[in-house]
Length: 306
Image (cartoon, rainbow, N blue to C red; front, side):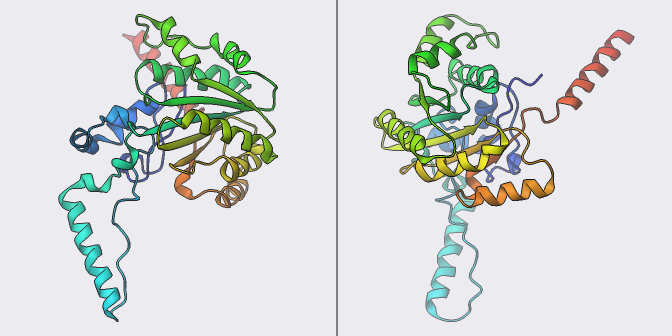
């Protein structure tokens, strides 16, 4: 059974161009080797290691890869062509220039992970344990916080009590697990509110800002662990009323993305009204489960035949 299927690769990484991430507890951590393999020397040069550079650390905003102008007219177009030519040659000579390392330096940035549907089974059994595993393995930035958001009324203390029993070190049990759990829980907060009204998301944004004040750049990631019928309303309110004003915003859409091709396209159009394509990640944590189970049976049969 997949522990957790998390996708967080940028389109700039050839190996993850279709945004299909690795399963399990190493999902975010895998980005350091899978997506940022070419980035390791760049990270060493600029300070932060690949472990400090998390999901979407590969930002193309600084990569000068604008399409060449087809104009052969005035000097302005010619000058633009020349600048693009020089910039692209510079990137070819030094690939590190294609990564916005300064803008994604986790020594000056914070990460807020917001789990919508935090009171549901998926969040309790899969998402929060996986986030703790990443923290336990040292694969989250130093300045991060986890916010749960759902319609259920809860205090921060009640929220922490709810997820405490799900946090285990069964993946890689080492020393001081209990201490790590206590430190992780201190970074967990809860905000109650509806999915189809802006008030709760405005309150959420205010609380996020309070926790993010230690760093000048705040990155926010929203994980949709909610029923498909509220995807659009929740995403729209999160994007319109709780997006980051100083860093990037990402929305991870969990579970089947539509019932068929038509409903998937409709959902995609709805999300596009509030988010750019590079801000949307679509995943299904049960994708490939049947194949994986069949493969396990085959291995068992081959082992028994020996």
